[in-house]
Amino acid sequence: MTDDRQERIRQRAHAIWEKAGRPEGADIQHWDQATAEIDGEAKPKKKAAPKKPAAAKPAKTAATKTVATKSATKAAKPAASKSKAGKA
Image 1 (cartoon, rainbow, N blue to C red):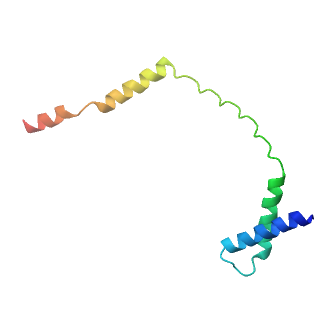
Image 2 (cartoon, rainbow, N blue to C red):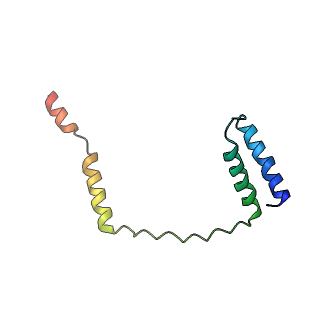
Image 3 (cartoon, rainbow, N blue to C red):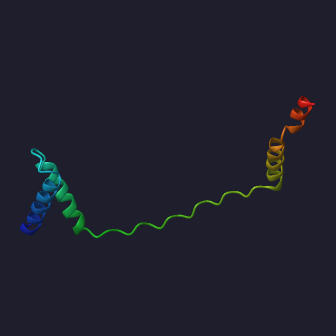
C-alpha cells in the first residue's frame, strides 16, 4: 500500500468516524468503507451499456374496442325508470 493511498484512507476513515458520531468499536467498518471509497475513485468508471428499446405493445383491435364500449355503456345507464314507477 502506498503511503499516499494509506494516508487518504486514514483521513477518510476519520471523517466517516466523526460523521457517525465517533462511535467506539467501528474502526474496522470505517476503514473498510474508506478503502472502498478511495479505491473506487481510482478506477475509471465504465459507461453504462445502452438500454434496449422496450417491446411494442400490440394495438387494440376494433372488436376489442367495441366490446369494451358496449360493456361500459350498459353499466352507465341509470336505473331511474324503476324509481319513478315506485313513486306513482
